[in-house]
Length: 382
Image 1 (spheres, helix red, strand yellow):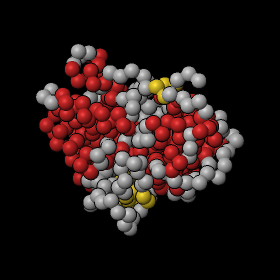
Image 2: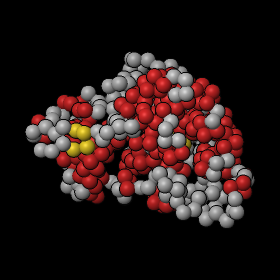
Image 3: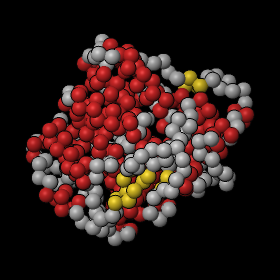
């Protein structure tokens, strides 16, 4: 059997899930994770397999772990929303769709799912949060305003990892590398595998310590073996400064998986150390996944034809500087009809399995520590 690249194998697994071939998808996940146990994309697909099998707690644990290490993962937020909806946790489902939409740069498919679910439970339709406004400012290159919005979000919810990584990227885009190094170091002390913090710290230190940058890139490769996020994040640098020594650290041949003579020999024990669970059989149809769409087909990287503003869906503003009135955002953010579930960091990390205040996250082998998912009541989607 010919060797297959990791990217091809991931696509093959995604196709198997979409077509309802859940057993095949599970075998593929086991195959990939036997070589790359902490690969975020492979873990996400495993979570979708568990979701298709109705193993909702196992799926939730995987999605939560991914969102700790990659708190801007659009598709995982969608998967997490579906899991929460099936667990009858509508508030968390809405919050995950909210995050996914604001991160996706205005994907109508996600917004429709949010509005459909909110209408089902008698809540209002989508409105932008302050974090969403900060992302709009970032995309419009209004970095000073973006920093102000991120700081406002963190003032109210200092534990929000998505806001901290958003502020980190804004600092990096401003060229404030001292601030990047300080904030990235703080994040990595709490979340050693936060992939965006690893990548941005690698770039910020490359001008004077390329060996340190190489070490950080290698840590990111554990989560993203083909450095897909790195190439997306540094795409402008690649285009404008192709001879930058830092970019040599990102050059990789396609990752190849050596196919075993018989894939059936891949034992389920290879994956049990990550997320032990008994399978209850596979589903035979694509509808069994509970997904209204194939979320992996979402275009989460390219800017849509128009940018949605927090004040109205179809913007009539003539320039980004017009997006300055946040009155509606503030009013909406203090409404008390919906709760928000945000990823937070506990006061201290430890290796024991003490009492957990909320849902827990099972982490792969490289991270055997647990973290909380805390609920903040009141309509505080900042």
